[in-house]
Length: 56
Image (cartoon, rainbow, N blue to C red; front, top):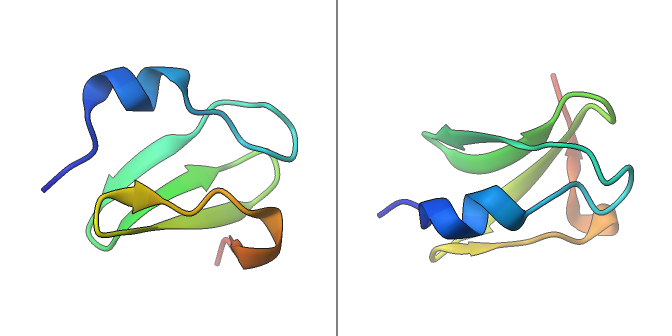
């Protein structure tokens, strides 16, 4: 299942408030400005800076 388009429209990076790109497999949200990846678990984006992983 994917995130609702309405949710994707309002989500921003919690660190820089920039746009996020959605990646469906594995499901994640990516901030290219901060080079962080926010995972999505059970259709819930985990938007905690401490839980984000560096973009490889």
